[in-house]
Structure formats: structure tokens, C-alpha cells
Image (cartoon, rainbow over all chains, first blue to last red; front, side):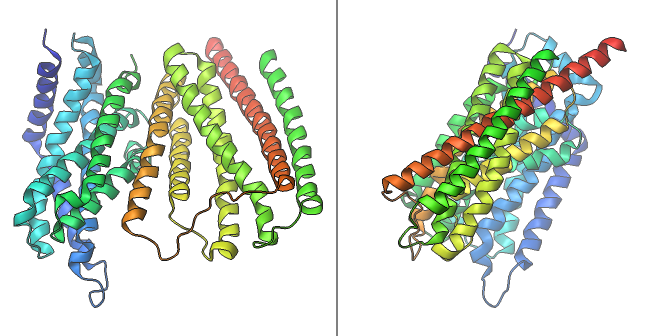
Length: 226
Length: 230
């Protein structure tokens, strides 16, 4: 009926429309992000550690924690009234469902990130005007990395007991490569270094994206019980 | 029922054999293997630590491979086997992660170092604890098998990425003292003791996995019987 991406976009649009009606998850994730940014600012000794020194780490801890709030939501929606069964029964391919869910989650996380980014700049008193393209690149690469694995895992954990507890437990080991890379790139960029200095990290992030997006699409079918 | 008792019996035999072999390795390591010149007695822990690490990582790889085959063949026994191997792998990881720092403190001067091998084994250990916790939170055997397999396969792909991450992290932040736990050329006597230790641990691995697998099989059979009766 639809091609792969047509169907995926419709599923993502459906999820975004549901989110726009209530905005509960979005508001919670955003306020949560602002709280974490503010708390991390004070989580240091101001006489020996400058705010700019902890800024890259604070940014990525905030982004990942806030994203995790949103990730469970995508499949919790489908669990209600067994809506996922209806989705599987349509002639849409399983890969399209997964890509749609990833796109919906990406939209959600990107909005949270790009709304909290200016606040981050404000709170930590940074000047990022020259670094915006580089920052956008690293935010996109790292977000794709943890949203793809996170979406796959959240499709499994919604069926377990203690779903909210289980997602961070299973997802955090997979976040080590993307978060470490993103923090390294961000700190170089904020220090005014050129992107060419961090090609190793960008390659790692890109490689992680390709490997885990592919594997997640392949494995997604196994997370759907009939 | 009968096949699982047979496997359990075999597992017990292997476990006893493995324990005896390990006792023999200890005797050989202390009485018949020369003490290392620079590290002294601390080096003896190597005969426990390194074989445990090898067997733990082997156990996790076997879990990953069994997971691939499970998704392909949908055979419950493969999932039970993968889980048994993961559980034994976690047990051996605990040996690896506790004996490592005990050796590291006198030799490296620090309990812990964030080098590539330590970091990746730590995270793979935590991931497989998550794997076991998730299995405990699922009751349907088919769903449990599929989810565990997905996690096992993802985990296998994660290891090289964590390795690469730490490698890049290190090259950009060189340590004042470069600590490398690489194996120096070993005299044959030590090598034989080491090989014997690996052999003993492999036998123990087989014994533990067989027993754990037999237990899971028996549990499955009991659940099925209970399901049929109900």
C-alpha cells in the first residue's frame, strides 16, 4: 500500500500528532533537561572547576537522560489497547514500523535538545556562534546512535515488569561509545578547535550509527511477539 | 526429564573433574612453577585471573552465537543454553574483576585503570547482568528467548566499539605512565601451568553450563506439565 518510507513517515506523524495533543512527555522531558542542566552547574567546586570545564559532560548527560524519558513512551502508547497488534496486522512491513518509531523518537529528542541547547549556552555562559554547524553535526550523529538502539530496546522492555527501570539498565552500556565520542567532540568544539581535530571520534560515531541502525532494523522483528 | 537428568549428571562429573584439576593447578603453580623475578608472588594470581577472563569472554561469545542460531531456528533449548552460558560467564567475570585489582594494586600501583580491556570487560559484564535481570522479568518463554537473543547479539557488536572508544580516549589523553597488561614472553614452565589452568577452567565451564542448562530444561518441563494439567 505504502512504500517503506511513506509508511514510516505516517507512523512517525501519528506518534507526533498524539504527542502534540497532550505534550505531557515533551514538557516533562524538557523541564527534566533544564533541571539536570541547572543541578549539574552546581555539582562542582566553583573555586577549582570552571563551568566551561564540565559543560560538555553536563550537556550530554542531560541529553541522554532526557531522551530516556521519551524513549519508553513510543511503545507504551502501542501497548495500550494492544495497538501494536493492529499496526502489525496492516500490510506495512516491520522495518517500516521500526523506522517510523525511530523517526518519531528522533523528532521528540531533537526538539528537546534544540530547545535546551540555548538554555545550556545561557546557563554555562558560552559562545557557540562559530561552532553551531559542528555542534549540530555531533548532536545529530549521537542522537541517531542512542535513539536507534533505545527504540529497539524500548520495544522489548515495555513487555517486562519494571519497564522504566529496565530501559536505562539495558541501554546505558550501549551509550558508552556515542556519549564518550559526543563529549570529546563537543569539548574540542567549545574550546574553539577545528572539526578536523576530531575526525577519529566522528568516524567512530558514524560507524556506530551505520552498524547499530542496520542491526536494529534487522533485529526489530524479533522484539514483536505475534 | 530423563535427558535433563543425564546432562545434570554429566555436569556434576565435569564440575568435580574441574575442581580437582584446579586443585592440581594450584599445587603446580605454587610448588612446581618458579616465582616470577620482577612481580614475585603476585604473579601467581595470573593463573586464576587470565583463565577466568578467557573463559568468561568465551562464554559471552557462545551466548551471542547461540542467540543468532536461536533467532534462526527458534529452538527453545538454544535459548536455555545461551542463558546458561551467560550466567556462567557472569560468574567467571566476577572472578576476573576481583582478582584483577588484587594483582593491579601491587604491580600497577592502582586498583583500577581505565584501559581498553578493563573498560570493555566491565561494560560487557554489566550488560550481561542486565541480560539476566531482563530474563527474570519475562515469563513467556518465546518472548524471553527472542528478547534475550536480541540483547546477546547487540552485545557482541558493542564490544569492539567500546574497545575503539577507550583506545581513542587514551591516544588523545596519554597517561604519564603507560600501563599495558600485555603478556610478556613466558618461560615454558609457566606456560604449561597457565595452559593447565585454562584447561581446568574450561572443564569447570562445561560442568557449570551443563548443570545450569539441565536445571533450566527441568524447569521448562515442569512448567509445561503444570500447564497441561491446568
